[in-house]
Length: 121
Image (cartoon, rainbow, N blue to C red; front, side):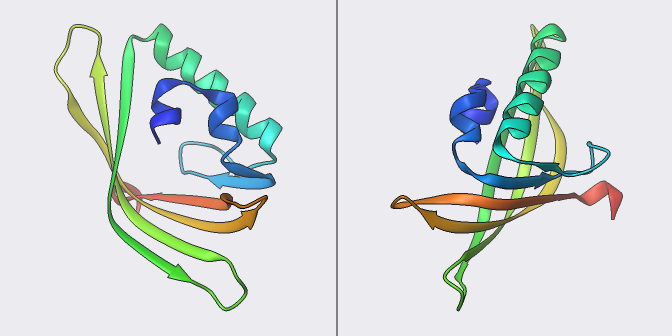
């Protein structure tokens, strides 16, 4: 999440598999493929920078469960904070993040990430 918050699009994209997916309620449909994920992240980072909005994601209450097929299912709570330039930090959203991780080249990468928002249940 630090890569996301820093706007490091390429590095953040590298944490996903080449065919990785990201589903979040703020997008009309899931984003598929690392190249599309990086492009989406660049657009979002530019929009936030133009608005003077620094986002920080805080993940907690991690539940990590290795699966019989070798994947790892990770579920956590996510708090998203927003700080406008010159302003006070505020809680922007509370979410649940569910990842399916796979081993690739000796590293764990995100095959799929799904985010649900508490206010949209």
